[in-house]
Image (cartoon, rainbow, N blue to C red; front, side, top):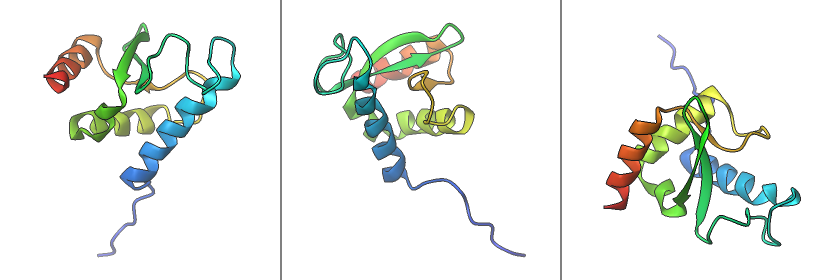
Length: 105
C-alpha cells in the first residue's frame, strides 16, 4: 500500500498567503497606504461569511486558533485564496458568530 503525499501547503505557508492576500488588496480604492481597507482597524482583517457573503472584521489573532484554522482550510479547499472576492469562509453565519464569540472569550 503506497502512501499518498498531500498537495496541501503547510499551515504556516497558508497563513502567510492569507496575510499577503489581505495586504495586497491595498491597490484598490478605499484602502490606506498600508494596503488595508480604510474601515478595518490595525491588527484585524475582513472575511466574508455565508450565502449572502456578510462581511465580518476579525482580529489577526484568530489565525492561531485551531478552530479558525479549520475554517481557513475549508475556505482554501472550496474557494482557494487567489481570487478577487476577498477571503470567503464557507460556513453558516450563525456558526461563524458562535465560533468567533467563543474565541473572543
